[in-house]
Image 1 (cartoon, rainbow, N blue to C red):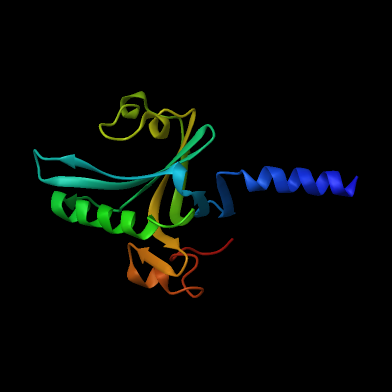
Image 2 (image 1 turned 30 degrees about the vertical axis):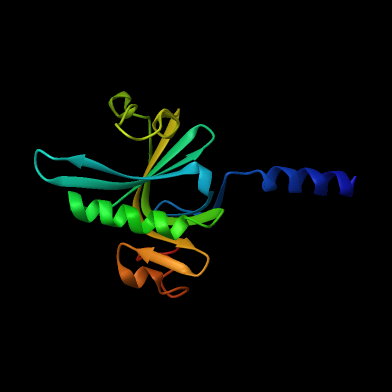
Length: 160
């Protein structure tokens, strides 16, 4: 019996796409298979801004980790390129954010240009203020001190 339970546990965790390391009312720490992450800038040329976002898909839930403010279009695409380079040769990505907010997906965001539909066409949605992305020994954060681990693990939030 123990062998069967061990097998089932190993089987289900080995194929899990997203592992939640920590989730509170004010904080979320996920580990994601690279195939289930989409990094993108949403450009608004009419006012010269672009919104940086990292989309994560976990079965029927979509996560959107977003920067606190818009960037100019060039800056956003430089950030996007840097993150793509970070994750190029890895299988798993660790992403941390603050103020997770669960909501019903808004249909007007279902078909955002350039973002595969599977990332925006989910039954559940969680928006998260981006704090940092980690792969192996690399870390890039919105606020650079959020990569000072373990000291800044909680990204400025108070642990519950």
